[in-house]
Every structure is written in structure tokens, then in C-alpha cells.
Image (cartoon, rainbow, N blue to C red; front, side):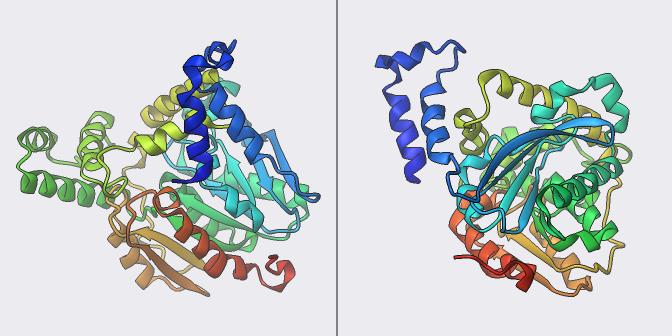
Length: 370
């Protein structure tokens, strides 16, 4: 077990007899958060550790920037969902990245810490893939100016891979490379393949409850806009059979990591949950016809990080698309013991891939620092 996590859990185990258990905020995780906060501090002379609010496309949005050396290239991590920020989870996997990249986490409009900053009624009509793409482009321009960079890396995870790949297609001049993790190519096909896999697993397992619930939502996905209720049924059993995290029947190890986030209080976590509910209900029905199948050329290097067991965003769809794609450089990296969350399921291998396959694409202008 990662020693930071182990230490935090040891401290939590002592919470019943520790004074910190009566923290004014009522958050029982405060002792663990304090420990992680101290360990996670950036103390290098040329490091950066800051958060700020940026107005992107007229909406106020929270941005976190962390890195041991400002001279390193910027890596913008675009979170999944929609509405599932990973800023509050990043402490569990990101720290090694920060020695080689300046890592930017961004809570998208309607999500995470950005959700309370805007009126949901005003925001709802703006929740479209095109608006998220343009928000990301505005943010990249801001980061380039603020930190004196010519280009950056973009890593899109899950829903964020729609945003990230859209940026790479529209503004390749801004990027050293695009990295897709849990890459979505055709959303309707994604749901069909994931559903068929989940139902097959349930039948093979003799799970009568799962088979009954899954067959009740046929056809899945139905024609027209996506149905959030049907999505919930499919994801329930998909997760149960390891489509989210290989070898696990739930994603609690990932979802609960935010309870120890250095920068997120109990109130913040409640805002994150509210933003997730809002974003999924508003945006998911609008995603049925999102597809990159017609995209056959990309004018920037691309690396796909594919979990061998990923059936949240079925990896074979992305792998087949990459075979057809023309790009200056392209590569698929498979993580044999991962599903949809390689950065947490196989953190060492993801870190190694970032160093060996991604970092050199910045070229001589930002040579690798060791």
C-alpha cells in the first residue's frame, strides 16, 4: 500500500481518541486531510502550488496548478463524468507526475468547486460538448500566457476525452500531444458494447437479478436522447463486473479518495456531489450522437492509455479507431491490470508511460529534468 495512504489511514484509526475528532467543521476525515496536506506541499524553489478562479466562456471555474519546477511542461488533466471532477482525488496518484510536469486540474462548468460559483439555471443551456471544448481552449490560452509556455500537453479522461480530443482536432497548434485515457470515440456504440458485455457477464455468472434488470432496459441504448435512469442500471452492473475497476465490484477506493483531499472540506464534497447530479442530468441526454468516427486525421501526436478490461468506455472501440487515424505520431499503450482507472489501478505504469512516451514529445525546448 502507498505509504501516504497507509499513514493517513493509521491516523484515522486513532481518531476516536484524538482531539481532532471534534474538528469544528464536523468532518471526521480532518486528521487524515491534515497529514496529506503537509506531505503534499510543494516546497521546491521553483515550484508552483496555487488555485484560482478563471472566467471561461462567461462561467467562473476553479483551476489548480501544481508542480515541482515551473520550467517543466504543463499537463492539463481534463476530468470525466460529465460532472465527475478529479481534483479532489488527484492527491492519490498525481504527486510523482509533478516532478516532471506542471499539472493542472480544472473543475469544469457545473462540476466540483465550480458548481457553486454560477447560477445553475443560467448555466444549464450552455452545457454542450462544444462549450466545454471552447472553455478548455480558453484555459489553455490563459495557462500559456500565465506560465510563459508555447504549447502544453492535454490528457482527457473518460468524458474528458471528448473535450480533449475535440481540442486536439480544433487547435492542434496549442498542444505538444494529446493523451486519451478511457477514450470515448462513439458514444452510442460505447453504450451498446458496454451493455452487451455487462449482460453477457451477468448471464455467465447466473446472476438472475442482474439479468432481469438489464433486460428490462432493452433496447439499450434506445433511439434518441440518452436516458439517465437506464444509464444508472447499466453502470450498476457494469461496475459490479469490473468494467470500471478490474478485479473490484465497486469504485469506492476511487470515489472515496476525495475524503482525504488536502484542499476539499466536507462542504466542498457536498458541492461536488451536487454538481455531479446537475451535470449528468443536464448534459448526458445530449451526448447520444457524439462521435469521432469521421475523424481520420489529427495534426498532433496522440497517445491512448487503454485499460485492457475497460468496459465503461470499451477500449477495443478506441483501439480500432486509432488504427484508422493518421497523425504525426500515434501509439496505444495497454494497461493489462486496469479497466477505466489506470492512473489509480496501475499508477506506477501510468507514470512510467508519461515519462517514456509523453514527456519526450515536448522536444528540446523543455528537455527532461531528472
